[in-house]
Image (cartoon, rainbow, N blue to C red; front, top):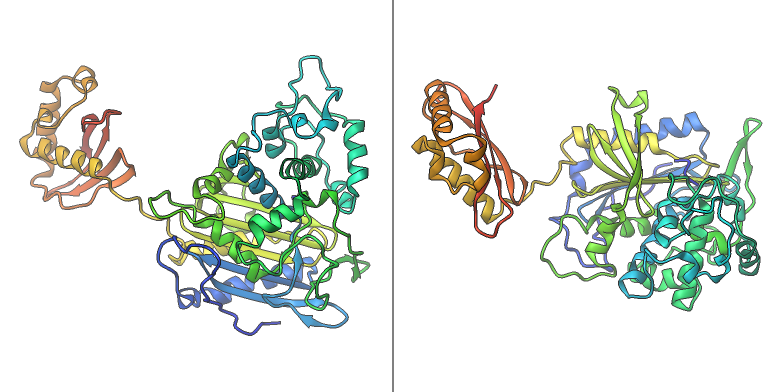
Length: 501
């Protein structure tokens, strides 16, 4: 589940309803028209290389689905084209809904992430752990894939239709361990199926129904659910595998106990609402928090990432780039040298493959669904994000300058003009680290080199308490930094000036 035909209205700019639109000003579809052929080309090339019969991808920016394209067919025999309303199974991207449900139940006081999982799943009591000093599994361990279970792709995929009674028997029998809980991250579909059981037990209703009622319905995702055999079948993207130079239909798997790890079926139009909800949580702000999930809870999906791994991006993405990544709560969090923080997940399933990549600090995300076994289109999705960033359509949002930081910057200017650091409110450490006489001499030498400075440039905030600036002066440039001390009154623990290249 981790493997990581044009349609009418190729560019869709309808506002996504059913949730408070509290994100920054909406984007206009025309802003993306210039790069649309490039993005389409990436996905078409991927489909041809990977023998994908049908695919849909979408770009969400600041609360709007600004681009959606269907490519190929959802049904090889009937040759129905893929549209934004074609229903695809999204495999492990379903885990994000399960994790969010756990966080919502935590907010309601119905469970604790630090509690032992057996508190909510009694069948886990009495399990035999691999060592006498093994900690027992917590709910958080299941979220982060730290429970000690063996990686179970693609075994877990085939458990999708498992009945609840059979799942209960499996839980009672206990699970073998790959290592003691808490030692390292190892991806477990079984762990997320167990989270589904926790949702059912603490809420008093099937996890599918709880998620449908509390997440899917409030977002207006009317074509989204777990039972692929219910509802109209002519809008489904049927699943295929590529075998013996031909597409072979994969059998449908019914809804079951393991669906919490990968059972959701959705459309591009519906899924854009989910992406919009997630992106709307950034940045933190004072706007009304309308839900259906608190913004702080949504931002929690990136917290708790551990067991950081590093790797290099695919050569097809241009210059080599080392990435750091870790698994948080239903999402993988990546630090990328070009794109910054990426919150992402892939899905692989018999007949289907999918990917979603969010740039929360830019308010933009891209997703794609395909109907070929384990066809996770992460490469064209990443190529598309890089193209959007290059085109200036995915800039990192500027941080606001707080009143306290403005005051600190004004103090730095006063110290520079006077040639005396003591004209600024200095914290106790500053003159202990380097005395006032030497600091005055440093400023004097630098002023003699750079000449008169207008100091009209804005400060670039690092946070509400810290920022940097660069002044262009008569005969040189000055780079500076201010950082407030952690006290209510404004005092500077860092005040620095240096010659800038």
